[in-house]
Length: 102
Image 1: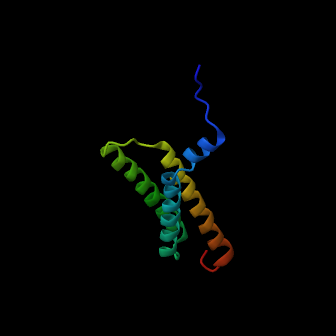
Image 2: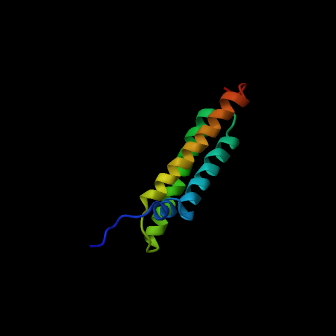
Image 3: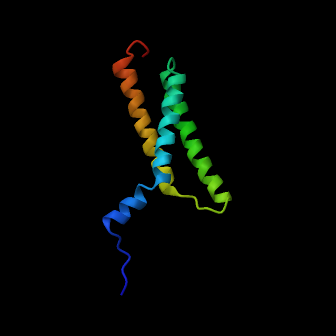
């Protein structure tokens, strides 16, 4: 009887696939870049960064689906993690580095 259990190495290799990490990195970069551009408007910087990053992630998944691939929810999860890391970076900047902006 064959089991579907994966070893930790196989799970980690699949979970941290290059595509997933690329989604995380691109959304992090988009979120922080938008915040840098809109640094004088912190609320708009946050909202715009999140919306544009999510739009890019969902758009990429729709593109994959149309090209015969699958709409991968795990990619969207990594998009959200990248956005979260970007928001943490923005918060550190706004709170601790540039207190004059807020």
